[in-house]
Length: 313
Image (cartoon, rainbow, N blue to C red; front, side):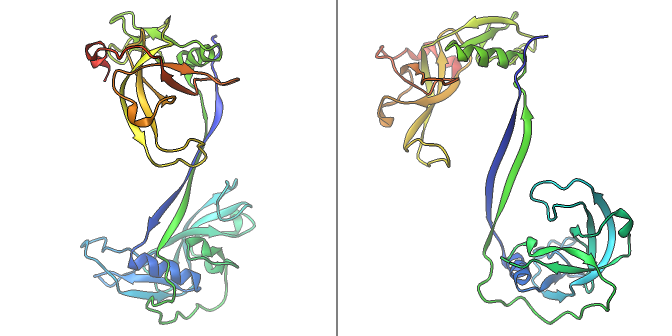
């Protein structure tokens, strides 16, 4: 069986968004230990609040305070909490209809085991010690056998209201490039660039995909291409990426390597960004220990004729 690479990969970024007046009041209320819903046109109180009526689609802003006590309507046991979840010990995910609300709020319930949770269980909000105006200001729910809380009469008017939130997004997974791209990556360690030729149309694809995207047939014949190539199209990057030590502006381009029938993308260096052009002949620049070219630079050759790369745009 051929050697196939695999490696753990994490994709993570902060998602920043603004919030409208209803969500702003809801989040600011949580910071102040107040739970707000919104009254729909049919009289139901929705928690969490929506900005538009789910039936009529009309804008709704009639905010209503509800209690911090409520009833579990359904639940599921989480025996193995993941990073970033409300609790780091096993807990129950619960839908809780707070007293005064007509819809249920999803959150965590802190109980010692699944035998301690049931539909109909009475619960109460456990507030976070430090609150910032986020749903995590509710640390979790906990069982409660006292009298229902009496909600106040807040209508969502708070000082210093929350205007936006930052929600971290993260995906952890194991990536395997497959047989064809494993061979491509292994060749790069020897500073060689290889593609695979389609047995039907005879086109050479770099990086190889294991199958021809045009004919749909498997590819196996390796073909070494480049290392020089031609810039087909490019863009000028003016926004600096986090954790990328490259000064802006810089150029990212599609490069058709000699002998390839598919352009790959790479950064262009060794030339002012405003002098990069279609047809520019370039070659790879390798750094010590790198698994791939650090960037491509001009070769000094005359520009390629448009007809030689027009099919690769």
